Length: 389
Image 1 (cartoon, rainbow, N blue to C red):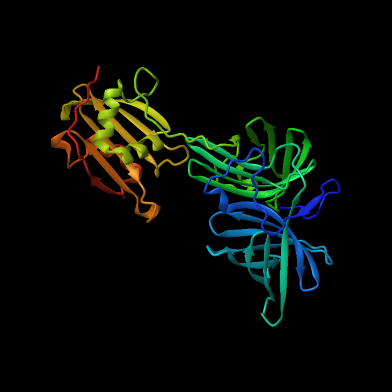
Image 2: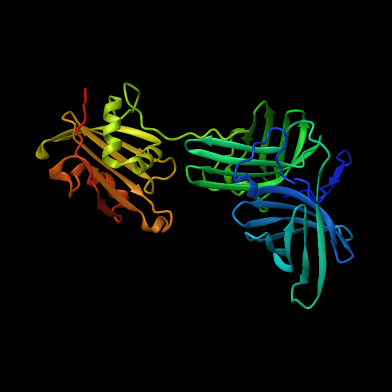
C-alpha cells in the first residue's frame, strides 16, 4: 500500500541515539496506548544491500509494512510480531509466499539483528535507522481520535511532507472493524487523498480524503467498505481530534422521541435494578429504538416496550425494556463475555416484579425469537419501583 520511494522535496534526517523518536507532532497528544502505535520509515543495510522500509505498529503486537532492496527495486511486503521486550520477528514475503526472515530488536531509533533466507541456510546482519521528514509545516503529523458512541477510530499520521504523509487508520463502527495503512498525497495545505486498488480483481479503488482543520482531521470515505478491506458497515468518516474526548452511551428520559423513561428518577431506578455495568450494555446496544404497545389482557399486562438494536447487529446485539404504568419493569439484553467470545453470549433478564423473576413475559419471549438458542440468565437484584407519570 505504500509508495516506497522518497520524494525530492522531502529532506530526511536520521534520528540519533538518545533522541525521542516518536510520531507525535505539534498537534498530537500522547496517551499510554499511543506509545505502542506508530508508522515509521527506516533506512539501512542487510549485509551489503541497502534497504528502505516503512513499518506500521498496530499496538497489539502486530507489525507489517513494505521494504525495498534499493539494488533490486521490487517492493516486498512483510508482517511479524513484536514482543514486550522490544524484540521482533518479521516474515518477508514475495508474491504472497515466505521469502526471508528478520529477527531483531528495537533500540531507540535503531532496529538491528539477523536476516535469514527462507530455508535458513544463509544469514546476514541488518541494521536500520529511523528516518523522518525534517519538519511538518502543514501540521498533519500526530495521533488523532474519533470517539462517537457507536463509531470509534484512531488515525496516526507520520512522516508528513509538503507532498505526502504515511498513515495508519483503525476504526470500529458498531463492532464492524477496519484497518488500513498507506501513503496519502497532499493536494493542498488542508487536503490530502489516498487512492489505491486493494481488491485486485475489481476496477474500483479504495479512496479516503483527509481535511486538516484546527484541532482535527476530517476523513471522508468515498467508496464502499469492502474496497478498503473493511468489514460490511465499517466507515472511516468522521472528525478525528488531537485529544481524546471520551463519550459514553446513555439511555434517554423525558419527552424525547423513543425515550424509555419519563424522568431521571425512573432512569436511576433502572440503573439500580440492572447495575451500572449492565446499564452501559443496554445503553450501547440500544442504538436504534422502536416503541411498541403491549396489550395482553390474558396476562393482565398492558405495557410499553422499547426494543433496541445495535445497527448491523440484528440477532447478535439486541435489548428490550418494557414498562407499565404501575412502575413495573421487564428488561433483557444479550451480553457477550469478551473472554469467551460470541459463541458464549447469554440473554440476561431483569425485573422488579416478584412473580416474573424466574420466567419471561410472553412478549419478551416472542421478542427473543432470533436468538432463542441463547441461555437465559435470571439476575434481578433490586425491587425498585418507577415513578411513571
